[in-house]
Length: 514
Picture: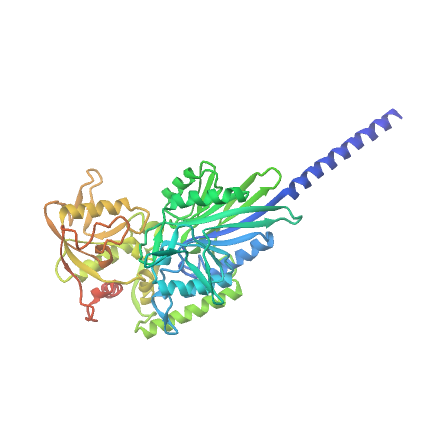
C-alpha cells in the first residue's frame, strides 16, 4: 500500500513539474514578438549575373515569400544605391531617360517595404529622381539628406494622388504576435555625403543619428537603423550610439557581419548576390532582444518568382531594342578570351585585375602621342562579374556603363606620386586605381613609371578619364584643372564622332578588336 501511495505521489509531482514547465515555456512564447528583416544593399541589376548563377530580383521575391510564410512580421528593405548605375539606365524608353525606372518597377513587384537613400540615387538629375520616387510603392526613410530648392531645405517627398508626402526622418513600426503582444521598433536612415549636388543638402550623419535616437528611444522598445556609410563610419556610429541594436548597412559592396560593442553591423554583397536575413525576437515581458543574422546566397538553386520574372524579361527586351537603336550590336563578338576577365568589385576595388590592366592598356594605345602611363578609377567598372569566352559589345557596355571621355594631361611628378598614394588609400572603394606602365617596388615602396623611378621634379604625360581630372572621385578633390601641377589638358572634340576617345567603351572595343 505504501509503495502504491509513493508511486502516486511521484507521478503527481512529475505531472505538476511537466505542467509547470509547459506553462512557463508557453508563457515565454506568448511574450515573444518575432520580426524578420530581408536586407539588401547596392543593387544595380534586376537580372542574374555570372551567366545566371547569382543574383536576380525574381529570386529575391521567392525568398521574401518564404520568409512571409514563416513570419508575417517580415520587412524587406534596401539600404541605398539602386537607381544608378546600370547599363540600361543610360538609355531611353518611351522618349524618357530610364534612369532606374526598371529597378523601381521590379522592386514594386517584389514587394519591398522600406528603402534608405544611397549616394548613387543622386547621380540622376532632380526631375528623374522625383519620377522614380513617385513611381515607387515602397516607403523611403531619410534622416540626414534634404532637398535643396534654391536655399530652402525640406524633406524629399513622394507625390501621391496630388498630395506631397514628405519622407519621414524617423519611423516607429508596431509588430504583434499571434496572441496580441506587441513591440514598437524605431528606425532611422542616414547616407554618406559623397555625391554633392545642388538639389541635395546633407546634415552631419553622426549628429542626425544622435538626434533621431533621442527622439525614438522614449517612444519605442528598441531602435535599428538603415545606413549607407563606409564601414569605419558604421563603427563610429555604433560607438556613438551603443544602444542601437542593428545597423543594416550598404555602400561597401562585400558581405560583412560583426559587432561593435553590442551593436550588430551587417552588409550583404552588391547586386543581390547575397541578402541578410535578420531574425529578431523581443520578449515583451523581460524586454530582452535577440538577433540572429543569416547570410542567404541568392543563386540558381532558388526558383524565379513568376510575376517578377515577367518584369525582368520586359526590361531585358527594352535594353536589346535600345542598343539596336543606338547603333550597337549587342551580339557583335569583340574578342574571345580563355582566362576569365575579373570585373568583380570585390577584387577590382582591392587589387589589380586582368580586366583593369586591359582597360588601362587600351587607354594607353588610344593616346594621340606616347604617354608615360595611364590610370583610371575602379569605380567606373560596374559589371561585378567575370567574363570568359566570346566577349560582345553588350559585355563591354555592361563593364563601363558610364562611358565618358578619356583625356591626356601633363602632371608634375610630385602630383603623380600623390595621386598614386591616394589610389592606395582608396583600397576598398571606387577610387582605387587601376593602371598601365606603373609599378611599385615591394621593398622600398618606390613608384616606378615605365620601369624607372618616379621623379617628383619631372613632368609626366598621363592619360585618364575626364571624370578623374574633375576631382569627383573619393579623396581626389585636389585633382582638377585649377591645380597648378596640372598642365596641358587635351580632350577630344565632342563633335568628332570618329574619335574613340569620346567614349572609353569605344576605346576598349577598338583595342580588343585589334
